[in-house]
Image 1 (cartoon, chains in turn orange, purple):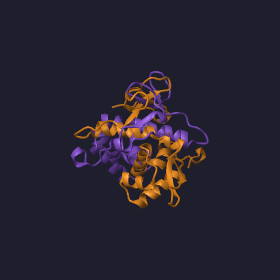
Image 2 (cartoon, chains in turn blue, green):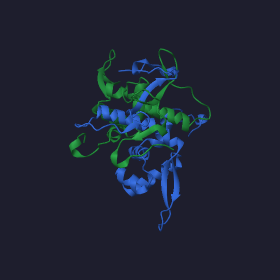
Image 3 (cartoon, rainbow over the protein chains, first blue to last red):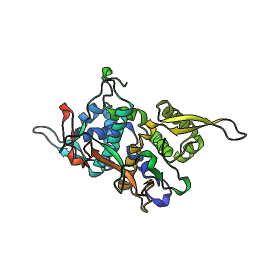
Image 4 (cartoon, rainbow over the protein chains, first blue to last red):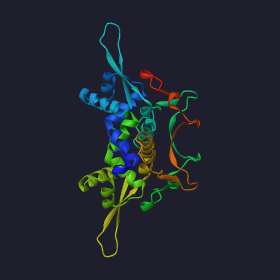
Length: 155
Length: 155
């Protein structure tokens, strides 16, 4: 229900979660960022049954985050690959932010090197909370613009 | 399994999703950022049954994202409120990034003003993908540091 008139789902966070609010969908998106395009690779690398991978990939294509494109190798039947769309690429900050949280709050005994790097300088990539004026915003400088429930966010 | 030796869950994204990989958990965290602390308010504002709210809040307390604290109003029995911990506050970029995606890719017919603002300057708050050297990183300048599956991320 992406319609004001419905009075439902006025929250963009909730609308996003209607599309990507489950673990296997977000792990499939992780794989897409890693460069995975083929059905078998998605299922195996995410570690889910093929039936579930098929359903989730279909959901992601229907939702416009992945594009399903035919390809054919010599002497083989036509197969399909799954390629990130702009809407799919735009979800990257969600997946990066999950990775930052996991690395910090669920660390491994033996740390693993960061996986995402900036191609032009080699530095580790992460997400930052910033305002439109370019300030980095710590959690205690965040305010909520909602008349009935104004509050300050923080620990 | 937060242990290298297990060979499981070496991916921090996957480890994070073991904690917050479902819709109602992330909507409860949204409410916590909005300043909600009381059980009844979480259940009502997220729009879930009380039994589910109770289970998810317990999960979030067990996982260390919310702290359960007793409080008592005059003449009433002791109740509990749920307050963000540091680990809970650190999940904010995930929720903000979901909101940015939802606002852009699932827009309402009638746009709603942004909800999170920077308290010191009033500007809208969002997440940015940046490297440790401070460069803003577009999706086509992201590379994957994983020997067996190196690839370039992008549309």
